[in-house]
Length: 229
Image (cartoon, rainbow, N blue to C red; front, side, top):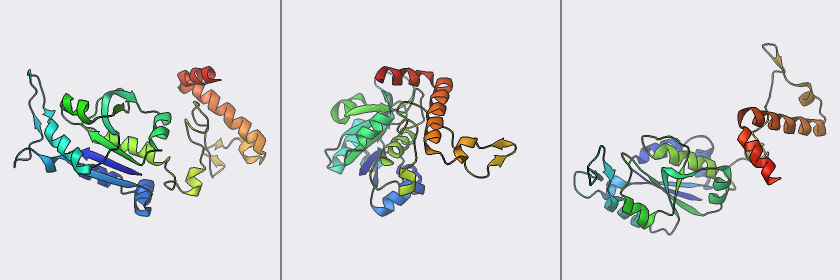
């Protein structure tokens, strides 16, 4: 799978994706991450990619021509996702949907955002990672890349891919608690059921813990699961 990222700061993308699981997947060929520097398509020799907004107001707006030229440079028909707080919030279901694509183009905004005409011209959909504002779209793009990439075949190793994950193995429930050695840490002991070797009891315990944890921390998710059932 290939992620093309239209950005003013390609080094942010390159550095963040060169480590750990993503870095390994790139080296193994399971993923390709292709940052495209919008400044390479600036409108003048000064590298201008933004200007003051028509109608006045604070801040600057990213100009349409450099973004459009960067997009055309890719020569790709892949869907374009604009990382924006105005978009629908990224969910595990959305990540699963995107993981089935061969290519995605991510557009990272800055300043007051991008010229509306570029959204109208090339953007397929807007996606948000939460109801807050960031200094730029790159951190949001990295969250999306991480959430989607781990669902792509060949990205996770055998041990990693068999881990039960929040919002996947337990549906809409949060993940149950995890423990490893030592069995006693500062007087806090691993629950006896996990040491019993009785797989049926362990699964029942994990399910009940997931329900209880969701009820306390994210009760709205429990309501959603009950609706689905």
